[in-house]
Picture 1 (cartoon, rainbow, N blue to C red):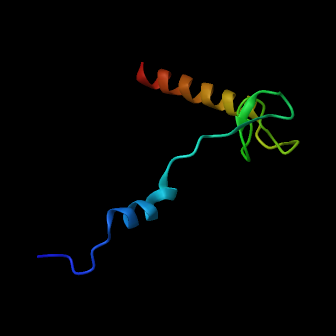
Picture 2 (tube, one colour):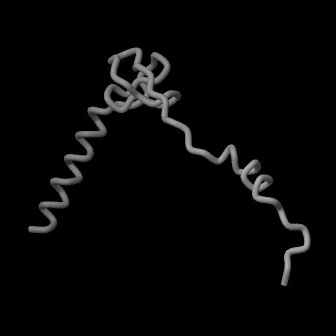
Picture 3 (tube, rainbow, N blue to C red):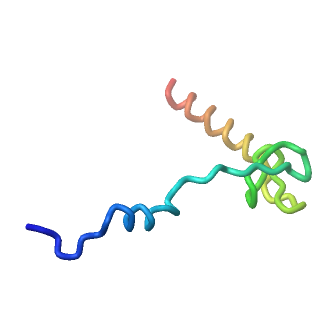
Length: 75
């Protein structure tokens, strides 16, 4: 069976021209000056737009507590 309304190669490539991947852009965090992705929370200090959003110390402590409980459970 032949496709009735076939698209030419140039038409297909023209439609797909915007499908290319773009480079990720990094910006400096205002608080700690380390590179981070734009419009995201800094993973090293937890600040976004000059405000503290994440409490990373609590997050790390919770993770360590969970790992200790898991190790104790295995023994």
